[in-house]
Image (cartoon, rainbow, N blue to C red; front, top):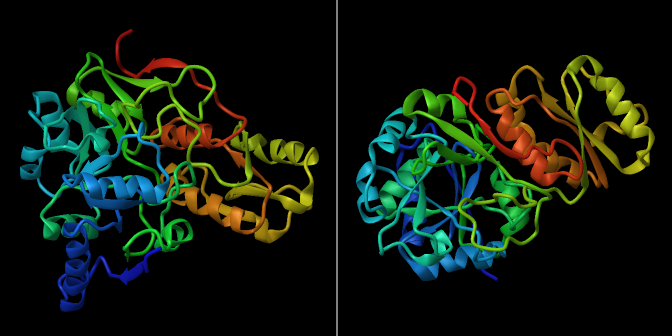
Length: 366
């Protein structure tokens, strides 16, 4: 056990001496081989020097993360890619110009300097430039690329606040930079730009349609068959094809149009014990009768998927904390970031959409 420092920082006041001291303290921990949880625009990540194999292995130990699950490397400038990737072809270069800094991870050929632990022994390394000002400034000050999967116990709900990080990792990491809630709420899109068509392994805020408009044909990988606890080989992308992002409560997914959602929730609730039942409730939808108010999470507007994404993990954690044994969760449509929400819920839930095969982005030729 270590004493985990909680270092508070205001992302709008990074020019102050106090913020500079806080950032420098966290940067020193990273340079010294330690672990720092840092805010990104997606979720909080658990950061370590990506070129220090011992530091990267500490990430896996703290999270109880298996070695077959690769981690993403975060950079603060294009120049940082020089020691990480062999080359940046034209298509990913165009995507970097369009979406970096931002929630797009690109799988590119790694250099020998990248430890095998980062890529699970695979030849490609996932890289991205986060847009959160605290993450960018921390990486810049540390002067090293930062490997950073989500800052939670492996398989659990991802953290969108520093309190979530501490719930899972207090005493297991050196520090957490507390900059308040993360704005996006779901992890980055992971894209392999090498094949033709390009392949999305994990949906996120940067959609297949946006990628296609910049760099050409793209397909979204949909895990075939039942979700697994352990894969047969190292994964090409974090969380792919696995039960993941899961609360302690059993998650029951509800598919329905908004107009019929109240009725579907009531129908599902009738078959379950009310005393430990919770619900992720969109605005304007009536909660099932008999559910206590503390077990109803006000999720957000059904026609604002960005709001639903930002509050998804906070809601699942809040209902866990309320002692729910079962959580009813409506599933939004696959429009925009709704595709990412569906992906996370599918991997966390016991019932719901089971998309299979490979689906081409709208507007592309079959």
